[in-house]
Image 1 (spheres, helix red, strand yellow):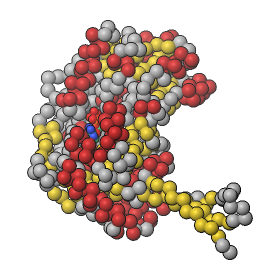
Image 2: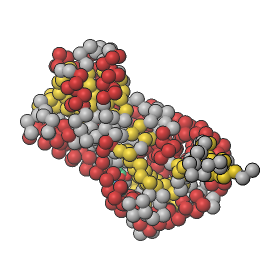
Image 3: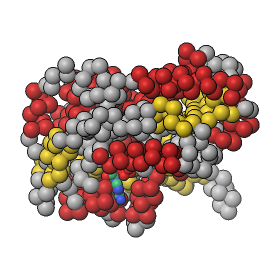
Image 4: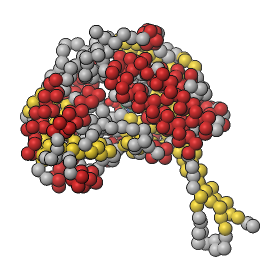
Length: 498
Ligand code: ADP
């Protein structure tokens, strides 16, 4: 049995999809298209226009016109907020359809997309809609030492940066679009959004939804295409004032280089190798499923996946065998099958990458206690995998695998675990499981990570800032912190001559 596709979804994928530029659906200037495959079968799901440099130029011009001249920049903050709120409402209204597109394109279970991705995306827009009317500057007292006796009235304004390029990944296609678009729009910027080539469908449907919500033309342009072509052209474009990127640390570094030409502003949400620490006093009924969820949620295709599990030596065997039991029991299948708990990885490339790491772990002498193999013989399925007997220099311990693979090792003291947990180039997330508030907060303070979850993992909320220390990124998504990444501060200084 599978979820029956809505007619609107069938129609959406059976018609070749175009680029969305200046409020119009258009073919790529080159006329080229690419196929997005269904990861459960490897077969083509839909054909999509492939944006390249010329289309990027066109979209940047449309976004610039919308920023400089369009109704968007003349609208009141309240009007802007209402449109953004309506986008959230429409995402909720079309939730079944969007969850089906997401499941087909990405491979994730429909039920998960419907319960998590879609409501989170809707809530993100609503949360950000509220900020539109609350962007404020300050008044500032001046003491200019070389102008004794002078009086001033000085204040700051927070203004949009301008034309923003947003390049997003394939792991949460709609949600990543929401994380990026919400703050850019509420602060009054205009956008060119490039979804990942693996998962362009929900962003294209979102473009229709945003137009239905009343977003003026040119404010958001959506350009599906490849990273090395459309993505690179956006990151380097002189007409773009800011680039916001979510993806691998490797590509993040390329974005920084490309952005240097016109010194556009850059924000980055990159990779991770997040530690998840289980102390000896835990309730196993909480910590074992918690540790499994930390790595296996979204098939481990989370930048913040709890991919390094550290368990106090006195509970190591119990916790690891519990996580391994959960791994063995996870039902793999098509995202549209209601019994499926884990779908395929997103692409052939990702499948090869993850199975390559499983191979390298074996070659380096690590022990696979659960999983470790491909599942089935079609589609991109990999068994949920638990690995022990690792050393800190192994590639599977140091590098981001971005799949359902956890490496587990024991620790004995808080000092030791703080050092081990921080022994990584990344600093995105971390988990701590203990009943002892002293241990929990003492370790939380010592971890070099943008998010620390205590007795939970993968908890996201539009109000909670998210982002990375070290090579996990620059800046924060969500919360009020993200507004700084989408605004310039203007200081206005008036001398009073009464
Ligand atoms: P992954 O390796 O997980 O696929 P990437 O970092 O390669 O993640 O991709 C994330 C996003 O970055 C995608 O939208 C992709 O098209 C884009 N991208 C990839 N390479 C580049 C590049 N050189 N310049 C700009 N964007 C890129």
